[in-house]
Amino acid sequence: MSDEQRMVQNTEQDQEWADLLSPTRRSFLVSAGLTAAGLTASGIEAEAQDIAVPQGFSFKPIVPPPDVGKSPWGYETYKEAVARPKSIRPGEESGLPKAPRAYTDIKSYHAHFYFDEDTYEKAALVRKWVIERFPVELGNWNLQPRGPHVTPSFYFGFTNDLLPIVVPWLQLNSLGLTILLHPNTDDPRADHLYYTLWVNRSQAVNAYGMPKSATVEKIFPNIKPTVKLEV
Image 1 (spheres, rainbow, N blue to C red):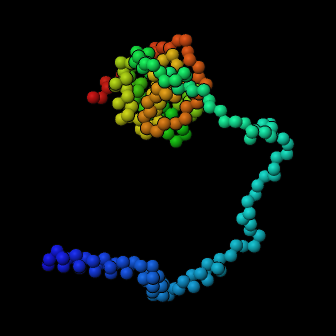
Image 2: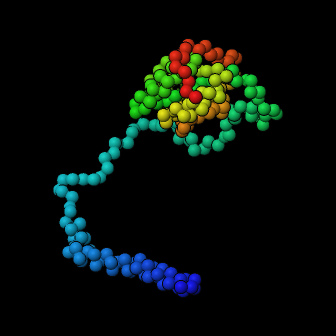
Image 3: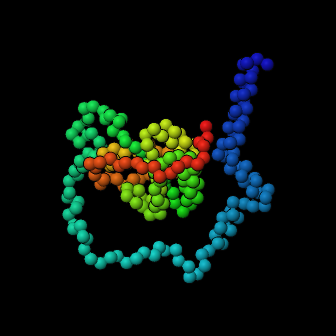
């Protein structure tokens, strides 16, 4: 068979499928199928009409009565002009920075692990693995939001030399937890909002109001590893 004959055959087959799947054809096939099954469209509609809401049932929404009183915001907030807030991005308080920051401004790192009632067992396992393998400064369990962190969490601090080891290890052993990694500089707000690394999904961090600090947080390891790190 020549290429031209194949094209003609393919075109004829395509047309047959197009005719078969056309709305009119589909409607005919559905009707035929219902008839073969002893059903008709009108019969199905009739059955649906027989399903009535029992007497005494109501599906109207129940809403509380409106509050009585005056708005504490007054009644002219709509007149307020839109104002541009002051930039809090580091180095942009008065335009773009003139030079990059030195990487040596980073004195250490924190790793914050976020969890909830469904993932706390994963957090406990990762924490156990960390305790066994890394010389870090381990903090407490925070079962309530603490500082800029809006969900339960725990954290450990670590020195700069561990960064190229801890980051890939956490990427491979996060168990799906959200982990915030941030440096410690003299600008805790920027550390938590702009200098961050995230393992898995990021989440809200309430650090907008954190001020700059005169001193950089220090790290004093309180964990001695007992298990050799897998390589």
